[in-house]
Length: 359
Figure 1: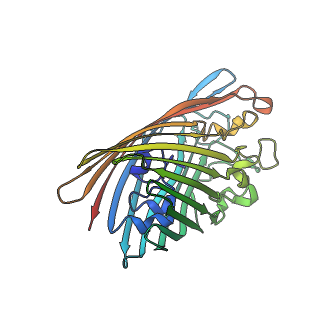
Figure 2: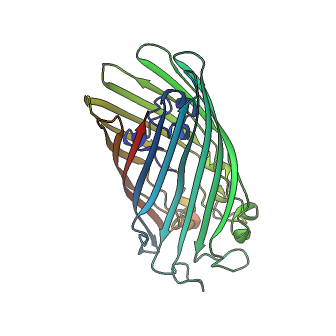
Figure 3: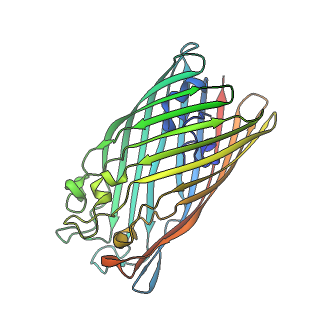
């Protein structure tokens, strides 16, 4: 998952549960849609990853994919002064490609993995009062999955691209509890995806690959006029998805991922009537265990820290142009036990821009 959904939230380290800023708010907390008004947001982020691994002292460069585009879309419409309907469209994923067959199998000659998930969240939100709202989203997901260079339980590899669809739901609340303090809470249920049949002998539970449950709380403070400080704590239960959480030594080996607690904080400043600048930082507990690094060369999601900056220009016609840059600091996990000698690492650069129409 990216460090935040929506270009504005990404500029604040992802902090967003108590701070809705655009029509991507439903991705973070569906209640926020009641406070963003009538608007349409179109955005595109580009991730430039630098994955790599070491096997037995030999380094392998996994940056065969130089840039990964991540589009986003949001639309919100107020039905009256209290109710809104809208939709947020956003994505998750990872792509790694090496220029060799590291495990020495008979396949394509180039190891790699690609996962793309697109989530569409139609949302209804309602204000309980002028300062509090609740919301609910139906989360509809589509995913594409491919692995090259890794034999399954039958010794086969090169199964190609497989797809599946699934659904879940999301609930949220946000409320201004004082003149300067707003709180928020959200819960996103596990999205039950259809089986990836081509990978039934590689992934756990005959091709199961669900989107994990996540939940969190947030706070937004307005200490002085024009300044907002926001912070979130969120839990993502990767450890409930067997294909991700199974250890390397399990009958159906997995990536050994741990569930993750993410802390993020950001600030924005209205520098001029037309210019808002923002910055942020997020930290996540480590997903990858040292004893399970072997398969993680395909998806070395080792980074824990993101440093972000962003800005929004409000144009004369009230439309908005927002930009973001994030540096995903490099992190290495060294293999231990059954994965001794296999080290994995990654860093990223992230840039994005969005344009919004308001009425």
